[in-house]
Length: 473
Image 1 (cartoon, rainbow, N blue to C red):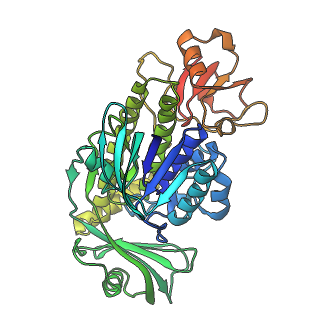
Image 2: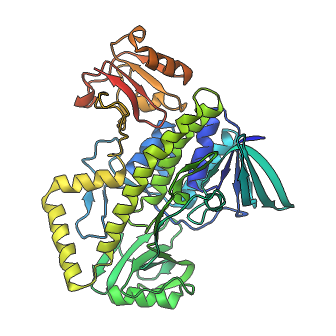
């Protein structure tokens, strides 16, 4: 019997597989497609995702190749959000195509010992008290395979979710956008964003010499029929007045604003992450990022249960913490979609007013940037009397010995920061928890540049996903 089968070899599934291998949990990844897609649905990594890469010592491969952009858009408003004041070592979005992200994540997962089988489509599952039986069709025909847990990282149409009987309530698409990766004979000098009463269009260069042209216009075509180059050209001409000399498309696609969220992220031994748990209009480029953050939250929990270091109830915390984040994601995406499709005179006036407010009030820009960057994510503690830092994201705290907290998290283990309390003074429950979860200990003090809210902290236990489990002053 397999310990864990991850269904789906996209960024979410590959990140989860690597997290499990870091804890020495055997993991098998089953992917329906025979080979990785050359097309990149997502192009942006947000600050919290880059921090997560740093927690595993992987960020340099991404920051060396990617293009740092110190701003982001909210609903294609003209006034962009300034990411530079964000409280992180990575105050920018990183332009980094999804295809390359998947390549690097798969390299690391396989290097750590994960097995990835492509061309193996899961067609059904049945679970019982001891495990899950998967029906699979592979290159050599159908077969059955059994596992203790299965994680559905298989996209919005998730077979795992449907086979597990998990409801996926929400709303159907009413708006459709268009996307084309094309050659441009007359490209803009840099990234371009235009929004008028006739529609909205964004154009950005890709590393292979093509340009991504994406947008939405009033009455954009529905789900029926493939997008054609002539339709893409007509939409762009309608908005900006000329077609930029577009030709030779390598990918043309439509996408809608259907918004749905799984009623449960866990059903017994079946768990969901990423698009399998939440689908939405791709506003702000947050989808891949939130999905990988799901996997970061799930990975350490699943590993602790499988290794016998924690009770199965630890998995319940995954839904409790991440489902509200998915709800917020859908709310933000719907709000941005409303702004992106505000083509009437009234809608244009609303866009102009909000743009002015963002430009005039830096605190509003910073608040929205924090939300997009996922730096505002904090998980409410069960104990109302807990220290205020409990559940919050840990910044990359400098340590007096020259290292940082993220360096201590490279092995995906809990980290106990003894900042003057003394390990022998830990509450028994925390001491037992730290021991059971195979915790890394640091005894010393923080560097001088530590944020003010950490100055009085005498001890803190940091989870592998970079959130505070417990702290005391």
